[in-house]
Length: 314
Image 1 (tube, rainbow, N blue to C red):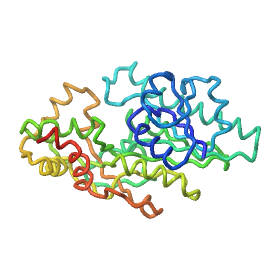
Image 2 (cartoon, one colour; image 1 turned 180 degrees about the vertical axis):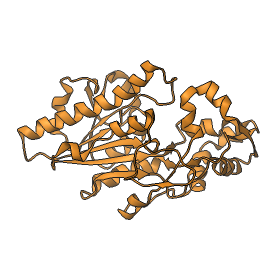
Image 3 (cartoon, one colour; image 1 turned 135 degrees about the vertical axis):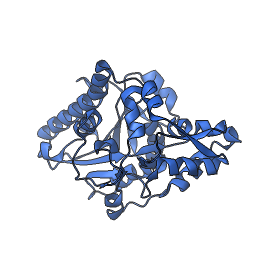
Image 4 (spheres, helix red, strand yellow; image 1 turned 90 degrees about the vertical axis):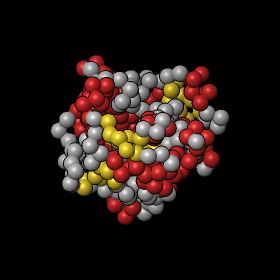
């Protein structure tokens, strides 16, 4: 298949694209900096110059594609959520989504036989915070900035009224990867023998291993009956305290302290809520649809991720 990936030089794209190429797909990456993108990949891929938040000649390239995987979006945790930053977070996701959908609908109007698959991420922060309820895909959205961001980011089948576009939305838990900053930052204190959890540690922690994220996208490519919204979280959800203790055990380090929430709020501002407020999210729907997780437990995922950092830990 001919696949266009936006945001392809980011964390997810850098793991996904080599797998797509290995499976024989013809992959193109939409990028604003072709030289930088070329240095990112050893694989043979095509580069299309353009900014997905703005209309441009790049939209014409979508006519020949079979699949669009829209991964573009400014980093949620990188900067404080000033009014300007909130606009950047919103526009990078929603303008890109709208431009892609408009282009696809336009190409279909010119060729009614054309069919597309659009795969888009979202996040489990779509749901409200809760220490009791387990959230499923049809539960209501959180009444806050990040909830609205996730909701508006998701392509909505009901708004399209077009059976020529198959849409798959994955609401992601925290992505674990040995090359990313998530697990590295989470377990950095353990390297210095001061293993700790964040806040009271009771918040539920939903995660997804990068190999399962890539695997689920490929699963959606291969199974044409798959459509709609799926929570992409591994079956096991533990508290953050339990999670950090498992990581400490793997690293052979004690987990015996906690970092008070007010300190995180001083450092991160409102972003601290992403770490201090959790929710239990069900991954049953995607399992019932046929996806089998490679890393179904926190321990299996962290054993793989932290095991790849053993030279740094020991």
